[in-house]
Structures are given as C-alpha cells and as structure tokens.
Image 1 (cartoon, rainbow, N blue to C red):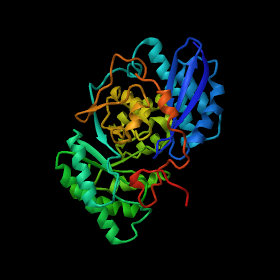
Image 2: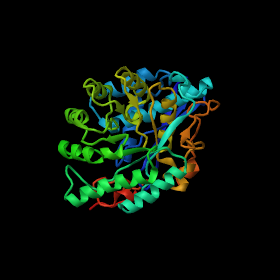
Image 3: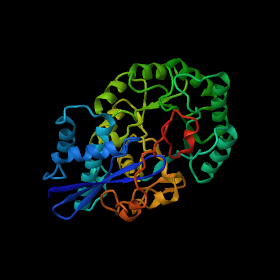
Image 4: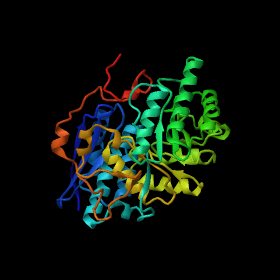
Length: 386
C-alpha cells in the first residue's frame, strides 16, 4: 500500500478554526487526521502541504519512520504548527492501518486498558465572569452526569491581577463552583499560562481550601524551571504539558520529579510520540490527562490513546458544549454517557469519517480564535483585531 495524496479541509468553528486531513492510498483506503492550532489554521494547512512530499509514495504503516522524517528532515523547529501538521498526516496513517487490519486504533496502541474513560467537562462556562453564572452552569454540568469539570476564573489576567478585587473575584468563582458541585466532584482550575511564579503561588494558597484536583498551567511553559518551582511549593497539584511538541520537553520536565499530572497534546506530537510519552510519564509514577480542546477528531484520537494507556487519569471534553452543528462534522463522534466515554471495539481505525457536506457549510474565518488575554474571551465568539 502506498500513499498517493493528502487533502486538507478547514472548518470555521467560531472559537477555533478546525483543520482536517484526508490521506489517500493506491488501495482505495483513506484515513483522516486533524491539525488544528489556535489562530494558525492557514499556517497549519500550508505546513501539511509542505510536509506531504516526504510521505507520498510511502507505506502508511511506517509511522515511526514518517514521524522521524517529517520532523528531523526539515531540520528547522516549526513548533506547534510543525507538530500539528505532522499529526494531521500521521493520525491519518493510524486510521488507514486500523481500517486495513479491521481493528480500532487503540488495538494498535497496545489494546484496551480501560473499559470506559472518565471525562471532565470544559467550555461549559460561556457567559459573564461572575460567581453566580459559574455556580448556575456548574450545576447543569453535574446534572449531565459529569464527575469532574474545568474552568478558568481569571479573566484576561497576565502575570499579575490588576487589583485585589479581581484576585478576590477569581477566588470567589472557585468557591462558587465548589459549592455548586459538592465535595465529591473533581474541580480543575485552569490558568492558561497566565502568571508569574509569585502570583501563581498566591492563587494556589488562596484556592487550596476548595480542594481543587489540579491547578493547570499556572506559568508560561517556556521556562520549565519556573513550572517546577511552582509545583514544588504549591499546596495544589500542578498539571501541565499541552504546549510541548516534542519528547525532549517532557523528559526535561519529568526529570525534576515535581509535576505528575501530564497533559500532553497528541495533536502537537503525533500518536507515535504521544504513546511513548505516556510510557515515560508512567516511569515517573505520573498520570496522563491529555489536552483535548481542538476539534472532534482530536477528541476521538485522545479516546483511543487513553483507552490503551495504563496510567490514564481524565479525558477532556469540549464536544458536549460546542454548537449543535459541530456534532455532525464527523460521522461518529465521542459520546459522553454518565460522565464517561467508551470506544467502540467494532469500528476500525478511528471509527469515523469526515462529513464533507457539513464541512462545506462552515468556511474558514480568520477571526475564529480564542483571545485568552482579552476581556470576555470566555464567551468563545469570533473576534476581530484591535
């Protein structure tokens, strides 16, 4: 079997353009992938077409070789865009392998370790940044059957909070969510790389009494030493990793033995590297909670990875809180039942295909991205440049 062509599609989802791929073969089997990067849809798409010449005419089963060539042979470090483009091609190869062998991808990744995956809700808190709004919406999430939920209470904060009242508002939102969901639901606090070390630690101290399961990405990822300092001094467990795009970054983080909840983003890495990183985390007694805040195929791919990962912890879900039309972009999407996900063992590959008619209804829009340091970003609406 040989790869003959790679096609790309962009879906204009208002809060983030989604980028999908279709890899075709000379045996008539095709696979689908995803290469979404917030704010860089066209760049990611262009990178796919730059990379594809390295795999045209190659066997899609040789994913280790493809992952190496698509990264090493370009020499330049293209960061998350490079990683996403690689994933868009490599994901589709895993899909082709599953279809050719008539098995789901998780079987190729080591087989089933979990009969079902506990999911946590994200994207549920669209609306005003008030304790009352978060309290009301958190109750609805729990009513849907979720036993864990994540949110960012910090507004557009960067490095510090501008005044004490804004700091107190963020803490009050955490308190309101805990009050809404009760003591037995996991509360996950997202910080989106916002803070300096001292501000992150101030928040960790202030919210510790509400027993959050983790404080996520409290400081920017580029200085791993800063993340380690926060993790070693924080009374709340620290989770991070979604920004990394190669194995080496995870190796450096893990060697400090300070962060043990690792949120790798498979779409920045490819499934080959993602599986290896999960094993690396396991050797440090850590658990994985992969970042899954892209499009619906990312969610499905994470479900296959998580199903085959012994040290899996939680699965992130946006799908339940997206616009209704987004449920039709794939022919079969992740379904959350009583707060859990199960991967169908009877569907080969990813178990889904792209719905090309629905994709055509939602064209690319350059204003579709999340401006995390602007007032009101929580509404997840298309924005215009200042």
